[in-house]
Length: 626
Image (cartoon, rainbow, N blue to C red):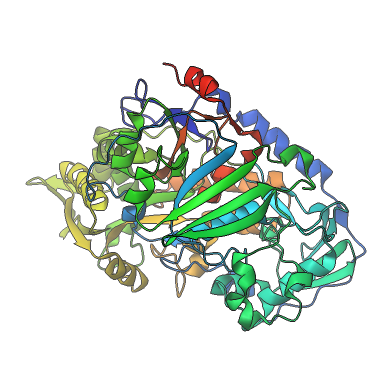
């Protein structure tokens, strides 16, 4: 028997002398654990502090019937990085395709500049247009929004000092802080926010389609220099996080139409309100380097960056980026399996690891009742879950690039239920469940009333997906279930999911650009036809929990509903959630006080940049001593 260990979302520092636990995944250090009581206390405090406004003007009526059910702005876009990375284990787990790199050799030197290698090329350092990781990393540092996400994955004030929500959940009023200024010294006003919202709402907005579609459902008004009002067509508890999108300076872009935004030189010479000021973009022999410096008048003194300068050098090839670690730069994130192995052998490197807000799961086609009657049987789904040795499966097949998880919510965040029971590996109980449901063994295979318990498991044709899929199929074969592994190109897998032309499939789901873990698009019954509830899950209790959590602005109530959602999801075998991919970040010992927590994606590694320090060579040598 085995059980899962709950792991929070904070970084784990791993070194060769204690790289991982026996089952191949990384244990969290006690110093970074978020106690259950702390999460509950924070939610309760925020609920008590919540201000409800009763004197606001009535919001307009919804523009169309059924908006809450369809929500086009919320609908995930396949393989576009919005909410779902379908069966794209290969996007995160790509070992077996590259040669073993050389071990990084770092020599400590006197420097006041933090330097990092990034794969890609900056094109749109603009929070409205940023889609590549390079652009998102830089936008995160240069800009700020009305809100930001804290270590619990909850929105907290940033450019706004506070907000209120009306009783009906349709009107949000934000009050701006009065000490925020742009990097050119001009004060931030509500007009800048209104200008940004107008660009987003414009039908010709050139950025991500889902982003524009959402903001076209929201009215926004600058009531005075420091007050903004947003009017929604339906309650959305996650709206404060949506309001965290970076704000653009109206005085720099006055007269610019939305259709022309992508062509502006501003996108590579930005002015923001964030902690770092753009100091220049240098091109040298076809390679780009961006220089950022702390903004001395950054409004949040507690989050001011103490480093003198940050230098980001961009590489087309991940192998070249990794090779720069040591000779040219102090850090590199997003290590592949082979790069991780090499980094762990370097005595002068620390490797920090954190779960990504992505989860891999096996889903079952529960709508093909005549062809696949067994997937509508809860006992069958639960038996398939019990027959998987979860920790061993992930440890052996995915190693250090993923960590086991229990539910669709990211461990360590406000929505994750820390009291979920450990997952049990019990093939005997699995067999008993099938027996009780009438799926009896005969000649090594299970069947009932002439129907064989037989299906195909669809996976992407990459090394990681195929290896994990084969191990899962072998476990189910041992139970007497006839499982055929079918490996297809990722684009074909997406088509099969959209057409519901599959039996079971190994899929990765992601939260896209938000920390709010809203599972509605993937698991609510209204999303079966034309949405992304590919499994066809229909469960009134699970659906009700999602609906309340999505609408209710009370943080404690939302957490309760998401806890309930997870309990029911696991208890009823809605799907088999397996793992979170891990993000590995290699940083020189010369950089002190590094900690990472990823609630929206890799750009979150800079959330605690204010604590980072560069050590002298002597200090670094002592810090790296075994």
